[in-house]
Length: 337
Image (cartoon, rainbow, N blue to C red; front, side):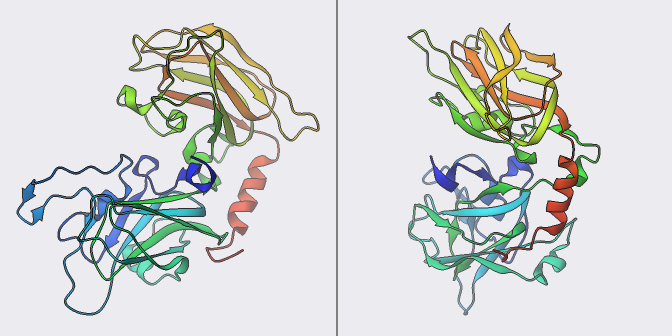
């Protein structure tokens, strides 16, 4: 997965995204749009309103118009692309859809959102049924909410809103935060292997509930080791690293190490943050650190295996918090370029 599809899904329920309003959800709830898991389907499962769908489905329109659902993004940011996924909707998918965005800080009501100035992210565009329909977005403003409009009615399984997180500094007034967290703007930018699980799950909120919610590599048959690189939310000094192998029992790494890099330097290079340490299966490990400022961290695991979460708590580098505050306050609403 490359390009904007590799960016964070800002609408994901895992980040706190949610559907705050819709005009119709008679056949299937709009809340399903932001479920992080892929959609599923079991044929011939009928409820009081018909076939059960893992998605959002509206009734058949008998008057002119369109249906809509408004999603609060779990993390505000700049949207780079949208996926309108109609998986398993074959004779009942919308022929067209459009997506709009707006910026409303705080906790706006549905009435506030309905009265907001919405700006097009994706113009009215044709959809294919049973398909993940991708649309690149070129506008560069800050978005807190999106509105999916389907023309005229039908079913959509998932809405993915990929983009770059712009962290709201109100959440870390003293500059202390998890520098790796996706909700703060951290992002996995490279890894050696993602055979069993995506490394992006390492920096998702909360505890992993199962092994499937972590990062796991295939079994190595050579002398090398696996690794993942995280671009931090902002430059900072790491003070506490958490390497969590919860749920990985017979397949946890035997050891791990951390290295850092500051790409603001004229000659950026990796340097040690945490020397190679032994790991235990199914265990949250915590290591105090006192590092120089870094922008990237590489986690090396030896030789392979799985990890549930990576947390890198620390302080923002000097002046960075003021820069983030300025960026947040001056960021244009969606529609700016």
